[in-house]
Image (tube, rainbow, N blue to C red; front, side, top):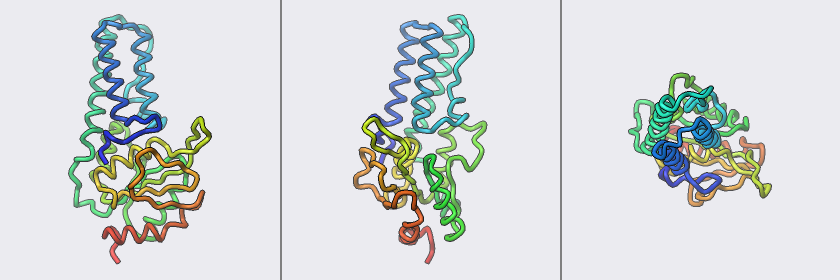
Length: 245
């Protein structure tokens, strides 16, 4: 799966959504709509879209910080140009992540994608303590001084297998429960990089499937009981030669 085709809850991929914001920022610049309110609104909209995927991590907010005060038009123009450049670099990084070359020296590392639910920790303990495999997840290493996309790029290059835990966390207007957007995004990245046999979705009972999950490798587990499928996880890891029998 290519990241550009990954659909979020609104039916658009994060690349499509952020590319649209790049166009909006350029429109402000090209049409000389350089008022502090216009630029602040644009930055806050971009931050909102990023939070939907990556959550409210400080490093996400720091990607495009909102300025204080009322800078003159020339300073505002320079600031907008810098923010646009940052956002364009972010989008370009997302587009090329799936093609990053796998570092074979880190073979066997298992990436675990997850939302706010702590069930992933049970899976991490199983992978690490019971199976003896090296694991990784987004927040395991400090990301201060690194962009979100840089951290994702590192994890894509280091992982030879991915387990994406989709738990029922986000309640939509129709009262259905959905997985966190960041896990949907990570599923697209890792299945695009590793293939569907080595990037497995663990879907909690009661959690709605996202729009293009059909055909992807899934293991479904009872609500609040991820341990029920640990042996299924073990068998998949053995099948893909991540876990040696």
